[in-house]
Length: 240
Image (cartoon, rainbow, N blue to C red; front, top):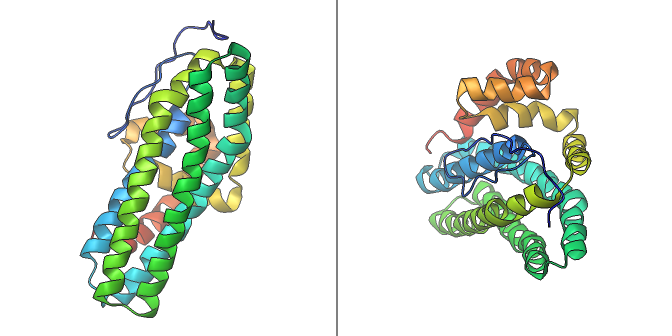
């Protein structure tokens, strides 16, 4: 038994994406975000290993970029915790789908596993700024690798199980409400970073389509913010 019956929406697929959840709901926004998270995690791992210990300005830029990354991830997970998992849980309970209930409990628990790894990386960057040395860099490398592994596992789990379940059971009005909650979570202060950040590394034609679908203000915002974002990115990941 399913709730949705509309024809499948053509979904996007980015490099590294674990699965494409076909169905009636456009998952572009979710996959767009996941692509950006994977991209930055790979950059952080590379940068921590390659940045010279004495490159103080680069370590400062990396720490600032990590703080931005953490802020975006916090908003992303908060929206899921508040608006997505409860919705999917209600559908799983309605259907008596124990496998789905277990999956959703696991998804929420994974947020609790990820958070300590993020805090460890934040502390590691602080240590590198205060006392740059091989030991602190090696410890930071371990923490970044752990954070990347935990988050990549979570994204893959979400793409292979949670999003297909969403496509099967969520109604169009429910999905629209979730998308609205996701957009509301990103205020103007965050959007000036999120828009160029999410578009980074995405083919120009696809980025244009996504932003056109989101509305002209987003395309204008990208035009206004891309230069500053790219300069800050080059500074943080200079050795990545």
